[in-house]
Picture 1 (cartoon, rainbow, N blue to C red):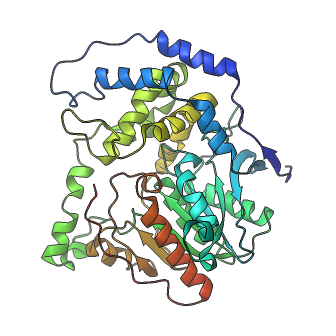
Picture 2: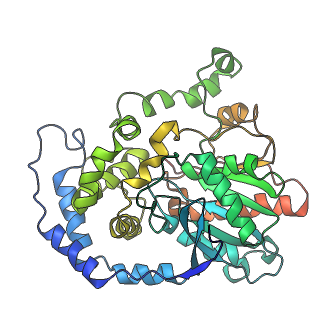
Picture 3: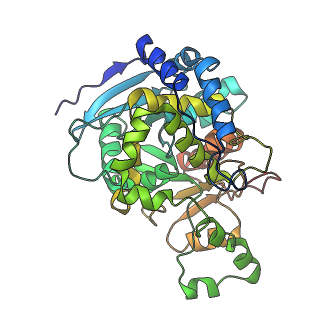
Length: 400
């Protein structure tokens, strides 16, 4: 295995752009099914309008250039090509932090926060809180495609954590932090077990402190705290699309449509982003809290790299779920929810900072970058100084 780290530059061939526009032009659109507009899935009119915007108005080259503003590299780890952004802070004492993105997303999730994190002096922040960012593309995502043929060992969160440990060692970082959202939170928590000698702390957005269903666990909560978690029954009940169960069992079947039809991939990813954040009210626009061109950048990355299907490994072998409990290193949580979640999380984690900010989207770095950056600075700034990382923030009035 080569340990070489090679510079990487995104340059999608013009022929691929033309092919995308042609496929979108030739989409065979289905009829609208009877029933309430959102009760059968993504409405045809919504998707047609977004597909037309993707075909005619969305400027991939502009967003490609935005991605290319940040230094990018590739290297091979555990037989897997790993793509990553490596944004070195101008501050000489900046702490390295590895950011792991969510599913179904990409490193584009972090574009808004890279500048404020790495160069707080230029963004009105304290330069002593600067970090150097390493942001890899998860295996099977975007520019970290699986080899052909892929090996038979599942890419669990633990396996990715071991790869991230190797990446940080290869970059020469002997003391660093980790942050993650969604599947990135799973990987970051596993990294504490994979590299406790060098990792100083784990910061997560949500997902920690979810009730296990243990009756004793619930009995310890106050009536107010039980009310705080009551909505989870609806969120994880039978009202959703059932995508997780299908991905865990028949991902290859779904792959054919996602790989061949940009309209199918667009519908699939739009449903995921929308369902995570709650179906929109009649007459409103899905993913309204996000810039739709931000959303289309990730859709385009999946399309041009052919990884919409392979990114679903997070549901193989029960790889998807909640972050593990660990007390090896301190944990900070941003957008973690009210006291019930923190009380449950504290049973198996050393929580040194908890904020209950609310975000209008599951994709927190895209929807609430200011609060996330503030939490990251506070958490890692406290750990780096060797003192407490803070007690957390008050709830914001908005959210979902």
